[in-house]
Image (cartoon, rainbow over all chains, first blue to last red; front, side, top):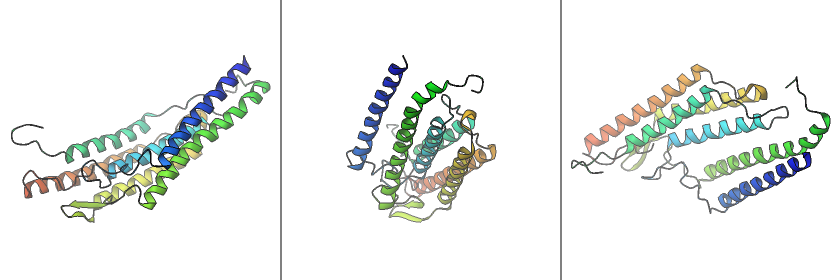
Amino acid sequence: MDTLRIAVGWVTLVFVSLLGAAILYKVWTNQIDLKSLLGNDKDGDASMSRFQLLIFTFVVALSFFYLVTAANAEGLPEVPGSVLTMLGISGSAYLVAKGIDRDPAPPGGGQ
Amino acid sequence: MLENPKPPAEVGIVAPIQVSIRYAVLGWLLALLALVAVRMLSGQISLRGLLHEKTAAGPGAVSGARVQLLLATIAAAATYITDTLAATPAGGLPEINTAWLGVLGASNGIHLVAKLVAALRARRAGGAGTPAGSRP
């Protein structure tokens, strides 16, 4: 049973690693274009809210996997409410900023 | 964890795959982070106007609201990474100090108010034209 469990673990790891490598390769070769990762849809200028969301996403993801893969870790670590609040503040600010940027509706009321 | 320690044999079998997962996941995330950082530094991911007010002629003067948001973001991120490195895995992700949440909320609020004021000014000046702060 242990052998089967370990085999499934290795197969899953190799499969997910290949998927991850494929994504990195496509980003590297610009098949996945990150040029407008921080730019808005309207004029392409970089957005501070997007930049903040990107930083917090990387910080929380790296912290989470750092603890998941620690030598004496057991199971998934608990995500405290304050971390979700931080991501919520960042995401909400981004949405509100998008709302401010929206062109006002024309006098006729159309979109 | 201390009450039910894994038998030595099982630890010996599982350990290599755990180490491999650790390197694979963290390696992938760090590689993606490095890729994004290099592209930002080389200009392939545009940072044009990140800290500048938006004007009709393109990015204008440096915006204090954007600069303070950038500084608050970097400070909060650095603090959290430091807390994580000092944390124990069994305790889960470290809590964020309420004061830091307040700082982030206030900082984002300042940024949004400055953006709203700029957009209203631009709309008042140019009718229903393009808002000045059209970067979210």
